Length: 367
Image (cartoon, rainbow, N blue to C red; front, side, top):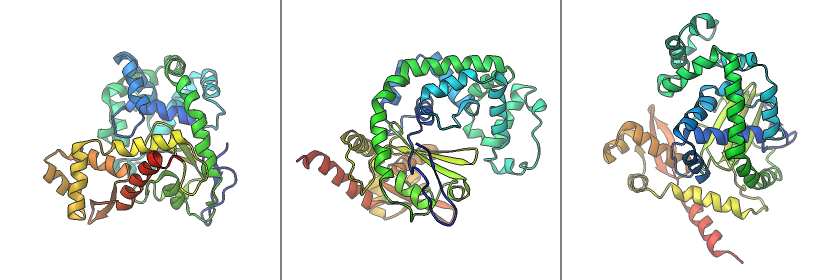
């Protein structure tokens, strides 16, 4: 299925609202295994796959999918993951390096890097040593997003395209054969049903941000992507069987791809018990933790709390508090807004009621 194109004045669905995107879908699941942060709601396949891998295999997996991410991220609408792998095998070594460096040259996440948007990148200087390469990445992405061990190894391949291609081809083939192929065969029918359910609905009157909220269940207003959705050439919504309540947004060329947890939308007559069950597990897993429940209880009692107030009350570090609040927001139990520059949170009562009704319907309405 092909993604749909939207103009800025009015939503125009030319083909499909949601697309299965086999190559991107599989690649998205590979990224979840690489990160494996233990977030509630992520499908157990992710942690089980990670546990099957040795430390050496997992490091190699992170190196390929994160360190060399922009060298290999699928950029076309491949009919299958195997077709993507065939293309990878046919790609000249220099092309991987070109993809990687060109992508880095166009990324300006930090405020400091945005000052250099008009300046050309001196790759001869940046690739002259690992420290200079790492410093460049920290400047572009932010220090907190850079794993120095991974990126130092990635540097070795950035200056040796032949070795880069060999590593990429061998690892992707290995991961597909040993971990992803069987799982993809299991989840593909469910993903196709999710796609069919969304594409049967008439959503032509929605703006892009309304579409993103309806399809993913997440509000993009407080994210960096809010304005970007209107500027993109097109949007592609990709249902993923493993990402749970979270979303992942990436821009490839002039298209924006949004991964979301595969589900059946409200208002659809399509019923997929496997998806219903997975969605309930995803929602309830966020509640299966004493600290997260404590946070929800505090916010319910106070009406609204800022992140620093939550941090002071539960006596946790700022990173841990942000992680918990992010998980509860992603799961839909909290609503986030900015108050004088600070993030404030309130209970999403509607989502809680819908979760309880969904559990009741799944277990009790079986006639």
